[in-house]
Length: 617
Ligand code: ADP
Ligand code: MG
Image 1: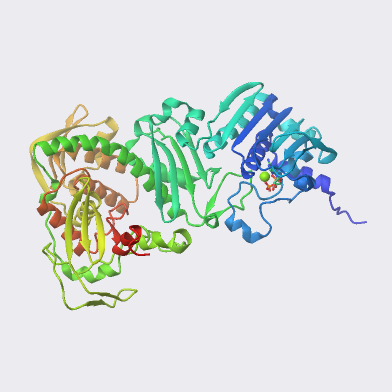
Image 2: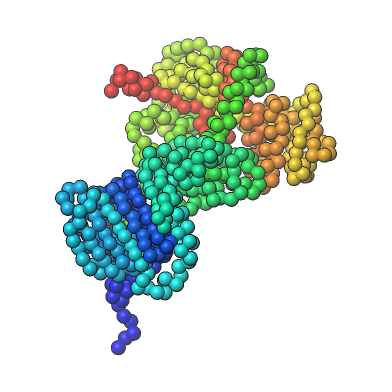
């Protein structure tokens, strides 16, 4: 007789149950997920003794048809997929068909359910996975599952359970994640008879967040809403001043599923760059949504890690989403500041720039176009725009086809059509002119060119121009300040700055130690406005402190100087300044994205505008 046995289904279920149902919290998670998958918008979770003796989840979802009830408790029974290909289209929480089979094999279960097409509901009782009874039940549409005496038939597992209060805390954590992950679902949590949570389920992330962490904290947060390369990033992020001593207020969701993700965490924290003190962590509630085929859903349900097929896109989407949110909240301050400025006359840091009218490089613009879709920081991106965007959207963000721009801003008609044979698509232009329409919101410039309306971000454009200029020059031009600037620093900063004084010198700063946590700045890079000198010095110290490869460090330091010397948003520009800036943007093919990779120009096709106004179909 051989020694190898084939295990009976009962034993197999009990073993696999241990993987799915590790503790009461994992059963609760599976049950809430099932309710959400069933379309419920009201879920009540009730537990006693940390869930070990009693757990009940009630929902107002679609219910289970009477004939399906037995099947629902069989292993690998699911209504969510039928074949492996379905996985790439999957947006439900569960799909393995293991949860009910596993939970019921290690507990006593009562199921009460009714679909809206059935006149009468059904109540079924199972013990250790076996059906005890199935009867008619008068009940509303939806499903209630009561799980009692978890692990009553697997004493070994029972021993691993912690104190009731610990198990209860794990459940509370699961419920909180469900509340945050599903702001559109009202979730009520009752622990030992006490209502602990009740989320409004009105779809507002702020209210879901307030339900879990308290209303006060929401006031210190900013909403994010960003889309990049088909990856949608939404949620709430804390203002830098509201940072926490640990990461307990960081929650991430990918396609509604709570996940742990180093990529998301790292990208978001990086977006705060120099704004947080050491040992402080931002508040982050981030929802990432992307085509399901770009995540690996086949990771085990009890594991929270998520795998992306392209980490770089996720990183960039989160980074820009968070950074834009933080910056835009800070721009409010700049508005006030520039309002004051316009009263006393417009001052711009732009005047120092050496305007370059190098039209020879223009043909290359055809190749290196920059749009939201085409801007592509990674070469091996495998998402095609067609998969992610509607045709209209693709048309809307079509590559900018910039033409050889004349030096004047008047309308100029060029009779001979121009042919650009080096572009991927042959492009024949009848007209070649551009016209500056003007500045809007004191931040963007509208230009008409070749049947397109171009929108230029003045800060991004100037930042890129400055960065290119700085990185092209080995030595940065600096100027002696009329009156030296005094900068207050911490001990650590003073130490960092003085021991890396060569970096500062290369960047054009002349700094001396004044003692008593003060530094004197006698010279600064030409283009940096005096009022930004102090923040540039702090920022560069932070960059050094964070430590990176020498080349990256240099680039980051240049970014900082480029940014500090760029025209800010909310700054009114004079005609000459507009003209010069537009001229460079349209003529220099290296000015198509800001150093951070954001677009400098967005193009609106005339056809798109006409379509929007229903002039053409
Ligand atoms: P999975 O969720 O992976 O499909 P489960 O074992 O969790 O597997 O559930 C099995 C099936 O039972 C589900 O596919 C679904 O059809 C049904 N089901 C479970 N819970 C509910 C519920 N609360 N409401 C409606 N149907 C449910
Ligand atoms: Mg499930």
